[in-house]
Amino acid sequence: MQSKHTSSIFSSSLAACFCYATGFSPFSAILLTKLGSNILTEDKKCIDSTLRACPISATELTKKQIEKLSRIGVITLGDLLKLPMSEVARGFDIELVTYIGK
Image (cartoon, rainbow, N blue to C red; front, side, top):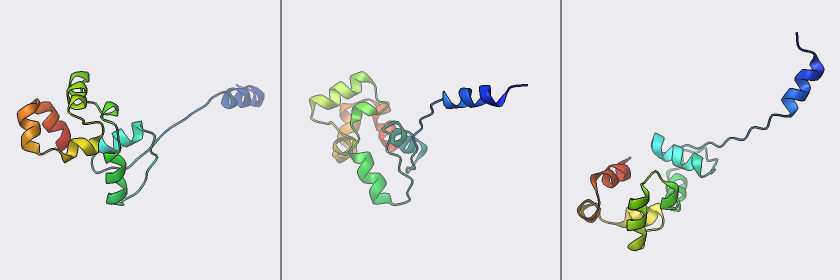
């Protein structure tokens, strides 16, 4: 049996930190969570503006994709979403087009 003293020392030495978010999809919620946004809302404008401000370096895109996008001035998800999908499909691999759709 554990004494109360030991239990309280153990609990006070634990530090927990967590982040949370809602999004349009599980992928968007995960991204917002990784950014530490701590957004719980159904307000689509709020979620959209937060996602659009997200740097592409915080996404799960490959380093090669991020470098190629950076060369054409794409720094945020908002920049990426401004590109016509036909242009993205023509100039990048299908994985990027799929990622955007998520």
